Length: 606
Image: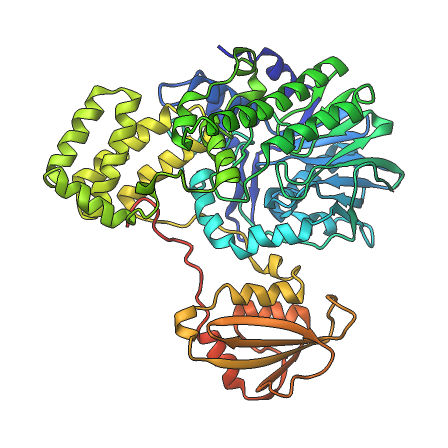
């Protein structure tokens, strides 16, 4: 049994006050975040939740303003992540800005209610995940004049690639991973592992005004000195730890938190490098040991005391190094991802540490991510080289088993047995039935029961959310989770990135026979000193663009506009205030072959 006594003490330490009531509202009166909904977690764990996950979720649900050390404060429990405040000479530096403007404004309001109405004099973004930058509009609005925004090199590029290019698909998958549509109840949503819940509301992105490019660089913002350790390829493609020497405090971004993290995240993202992650934590131990008395992250609660910080970082380092090294060892023995996930276990000393338990990442899906990073999706078995798609495969299995009724009866016998392995196979079998015969009501009902039982037994919060969301959707059908506004992201994109966001929406077959040329004359470009001309051509179903310093004589249409107008055109398809020369029909033909993303595509049904 994991001992949570020290975690309990650390999670409560430094508490000043909570937001009362703990409900953050949007402008239209709807709820962006409800911190009071998880009050039931103060009770004992019910049969519908894993006891360890219940206890961990209780600690992550604690909300309020906390003092980390003199001059450093955190607002926790009002979003998935934390908002950290460092007091400077004239105002405050905010480290990470939560997911939405609504929760960021509430967090700043709570701080100011107890520490005074200090302006924001600087923003530091540790990495490009939306729960760390999405609330920046509210933070900058609370600033005093021009506020510097500092981030690691590559921040904007990776924020765009993750949140814009594949944002619709990732958003749909995130609804499962974070359980956004689940009721917050003892048999429903109890947490996300990293924090209580993902907030909804207005999301924005701001381009950094300054970037950190190497480990050891320093900055002084509003009298506060910061020293940086770059950690690209760890928890994010661009990320950094921050030492605050005067405070003897270390911000670990999301590189060391109080759970096993993801090597491959279930919402979908670039696979992380477990070996490199472990190396960065070794480097952090070398760089910062003896220089810090408190270490805090952008999730969970701090760790105090030099010896405990060293033990915490060492444990985090060891778990990623062990997963990496042992997975590679088993790869070279010929084991496949599924086989490695079943065989590999953590050493007892690591398994007993609360900070290495799988409340967010899991050993099972992490070792599959390590395999994927080295060898890709194919496990070398020819039978898996050209699998049938789910519906066709399901039809074959159902015929083989003698029809849907026979398959459901067999699955029901497995479920009655109650063993976890029986439930796992029942899920596989019933999934085939549902994809083969979508109208099979008995199969859907039983599959929902199987998913529910697997979810209630899961120690991992994201697995629980995925299973329980799947149980609802297999019965009720697809439903999109609440999404933040995308225009706040589009406005931060460069011209090139905005045109690329068009290219990935072109329905290739519909555009095979088109040959369209459009010039975009940007009046306020910032992508190059070569000029504000951008030439785009749709040909062979591919939309390509290039910069230029003069008009393209072959262009059939020229649009003269600003970057905000370009973002508006892409979002609304309206030419509000945009000047043009040439044939507007060219733009119309382009717009006609752009496919709108589907935010409710089916996942657990065909």
